[in-house]
Length: 151
Image (cartoon, rainbow, N blue to C red; front, side):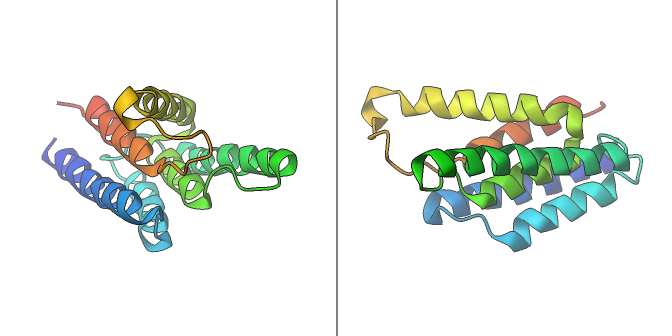
């Protein structure tokens, strides 16, 4: 119980750090996203993890692939990137932490949160504006880690 709480706190600290960096710079450093992936996969080898190692590995691949393939399609249609690869690595890392079963719910909740908050009138931006998506993924990841906590 205490071990998993410490895991959630460490996970939350990494996600908050990524959130702040993405808000300020629109970048998600590889050292943190890939470090989060490694940390999550290693923790899945212990009793503190949220899933098995194999579920985490498949989740990492699925999370990265969803955004990567979406970006390829968007780039093919619009001749420009639609989302950064830091976001793909972050979703992959969250898939590595929580497993493949939670990749789509995390992406859906983060996307819906982003959409709703971007439609608030005082924050209205052009559709072509660059939006940091990482914070939405990070906050959703923190929410899922709290949801997964076994008291």
